Image 1 (spheres, rainbow, N blue to C red):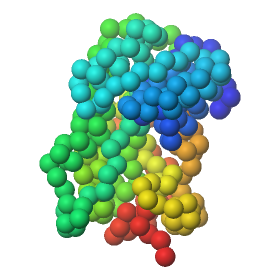
Image 2: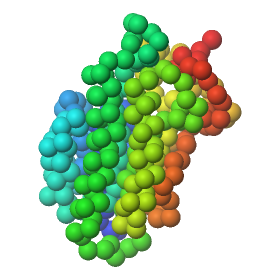
Image 3: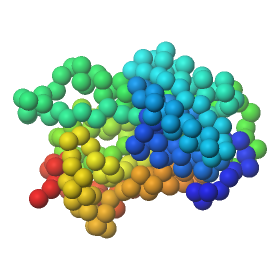
Image 4: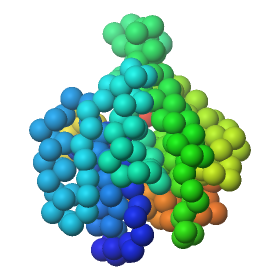
Length: 268
């Protein structure tokens, strides 16, 4: 499926698409023939490099800078995609704030600013962009194929087995999980709403490569998720018209193993 070109005109808007996991997902959709609206925050050079790679695959793409903590900037991002391609068929919210805090640890205690930042980017932006997409689609004629538009929210396997590490991040993603189910009801049948929860996929923070590899193997399958695993799942969801109101966990079964600490700390 990765190299298959679609005969129809399909467009994906992906936030946080300039690098890391977002970049891999973006390139995967481009290889499948989708037009791409590539959002970036401050990583302009990385965005331009990714944009060049996408265009080399023979599809159309634009890169749009936006601050997801600012409603007007966020609306301008969505409108730029509509102005360029006419419609958006898939919205993937990959951008997120991921900063360590925990109420019991004075060195990393929660702050109001941190909570607000997480809620703005990890919750408010995905929900408001989904709302924009729903009202946009209501003004569009129905597609002449079987594709049913979808919003895909990047969540986290730890939402199955909660622990207090990355407290503000986890709180915002937990709210987004609930919002994903509520939007599935509210937007049907015009727009689907699906969660996609990776396991430990890439090194984070100060984690070394050796620490990442050790944590990555702590699953029933002996491995968690790769960026390609997540990209393949996202493309599957985009084409699976009967999937809505649920979350797909792509983590090698990592969510089946309870942990009192975040997985990145589970090393021996």
